[in-house]
Length: 596
Image 1 (cartoon, rainbow, N blue to C red):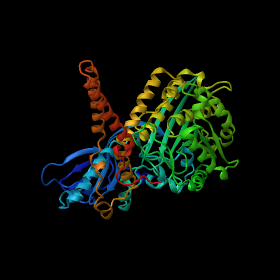
Image 2: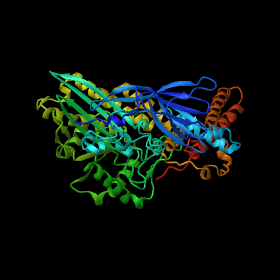
Image 3: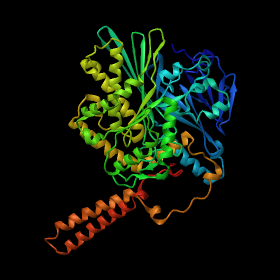
Image 4: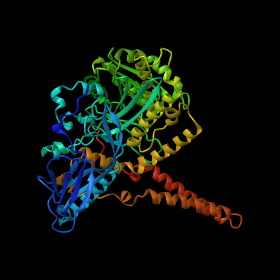
């Protein structure tokens, strides 16, 4: 059905990393007879060696690694990314899939450390701190045997010649998380070391229904074109690439048959932003509104080329700030709507509220004809294609997380029921809910899927996850949503700026050069130089404490009433200043203004 890569292009699955004083040496230790790779610690240059050199000084440290993710070039040095721990996440079309448990960065920057240029050292130090954040990147997956950047349908459509290529050459660049970091390895023709990695999610389970054993897999592939954090990557760029674009593929194996169904999510495809300013919900701002139609047209043209027919499901509110975005979205695509390009608006919050998610059946009734018409991918027991998916459902809310995940799980459930009925596993009147054990596993599958995608974009698990996980809302779920919402507020305002910088470095969205980064910085204004949110918060709390203490002593001395008013006024004044200058206090990306 789906042939493995040519054995001559086999990737190394286990290696030893030798840390010498002047170089790193990577030695294959999986039984392969390939050459060792030497990487200079001075400047990152590479050479192939027949064997590991004999130590001349102190004994080198030796670390077992499971893959080279790539090399990142900064000012005068390079950084080697390797996988030091992995865990098996399951199998994809019969091939093992691994999750990166630990990513480690090894610096090749001795030339910088020995440089007399203090400014250069300072810049490199700042970039190094960003790479510490990069080491904690969640949701990274890889395979030594199969191209996981492609859906089952696209993988099966590969020609025989393409299947003989190294995995990195088969990979779809927009889902290849380490695409930019592989460039140095590509230049050095190191095919055996070049491990394609995706960011997303990989979940699966097996369940028995009667005599049949069903294997269900759910995989997410995050697009790298406009990747980033929740508040610093919104909307689309001028080329039509959108934030938080994720392809979700649901695969089922049973009795030799393989069925696959793909859907996507992504931010509303025009130029808009929501810049953090310490308010709980910063206002939405449409950027270059005159460009909205052109950007949306580019986005949907790209989707049509890649997936065929498109049904855009818009879940945002009809009124308020979200309503203005909905109106701009709906108007921007009026000229491209057709029988093959449809748009459906479903006001999730108005119709479903916070607990009545069963009302999503109203949405399903509106889109069922599209799902039936555009079908799903199906292979029989002989590996022959008997059905093909010819269209895609594209879902969005504001974040493309919580409402989107609830909706996508509903669509995935309906499609799986259709597939199992066709394969004779379910009777015509049976649904997933008819089999409690299978139903529970399916709910957990989609809940974990939503949490993984949400953690990568917002820093917390998905909201409304209790409904996806248990099929109903609970008081504990509402409490968890409140905690996660407050955590998002903190992360968005005080952490995500640095995280966005790290992402931009890894993806090559910010190219480091001496002329660009070593130029003298514009001096900060007085407010920026002394602004500290923690200090401001401490002063506010101190003011209220002293105000309350003074109030308690008013009965002994009326002057304490004046003091309490003074302290309260001071606290209110500081709070007002913080609110008015909220953007100054936030952790913002330092490398460059977020591109639109």
